[in-house]
Length: 162
Length: 93
Length: 125
Image 1 (spheres, one colour):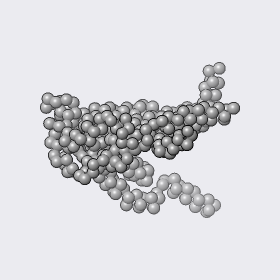
Image 2 (cartoon, each protein chain N blue to C red):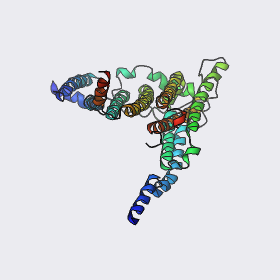
Image 3 (cartoon, each protein chain N blue to C red):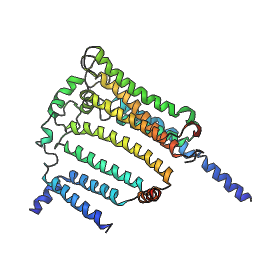
Image 4 (cartoon, rainbow over the protein chains, first blue to last red):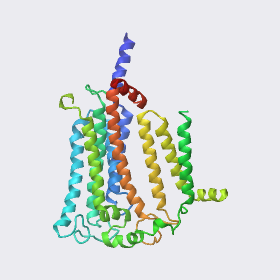
């Protein structure tokens, strides 16, 4: 009888998913992954990378975060509304940047003549491209995270079980 | 029969594709028709036109920025479609 | 004659690899009945097309198309820029197809395409 209760306690412990190793390693690893994603985003016009790949790295790190700390802290810090907000904000910034060119009398999404281009090769250069890269990064990371969350929520039944 | 038929069809298709590959320009050939288009213009002018030294970023975010906006729209529509397909209603959530 | 063809194939080894990947994906698509495996096969075929398209843009001795001082020979940037669009489309339709697979599993209780067809046939008769 005692063995049965011990076994049952172990099972519930496994079910709530509090793995010490996973949490500690992820707490160490996540800042570096996100820093790498930020590097890819900010150097999108100087080195291989750009909005899509940097956003994918950041989105993957957020997926890792929400898989590790399963439902305890993630629910109120990284819920579905946040990811959808980032996604919509990225798309809106993109369109707004396009309308800036229209406002100055050029075509939609004009770079040269509207934004200061700077010296090619420096970090703060290339005008519109840097802003659009950051917006695309926010959009792609939000898209990946919200796709993950939708598949996770939609795949479960009414009681929340997968 | 059910196992052999796909293999036969795929052997025919694969043979066709392999023979096409044998007729293509050699890998890495600088004089291939793929390199006679707008590549030189992009490589020559992109730093001056856009201020970015990464030519691919210059192409997708400046010369073809409208195309990339459509790409972002495709991602948005994908999220919308998945959301619409898996929506369960408020009382289930 | 056949030696010449073999030599040309060896020179185009990247194109040949993409053809092999495409045929592998097509074979899985035709013969397997699990819907998830069919989706994986579709992604393998996608990857084959991407490899083919990017390999077209290579030039002998070319560097990545980043205009650093001192580098004079670059690969073709146009196929790489076009393939980015393809990757995004691939991610989008994979997500949507996974959502549809989830719906199918909820409705029919199986992922086997033949069983789904059988269940549908029974329902209509």
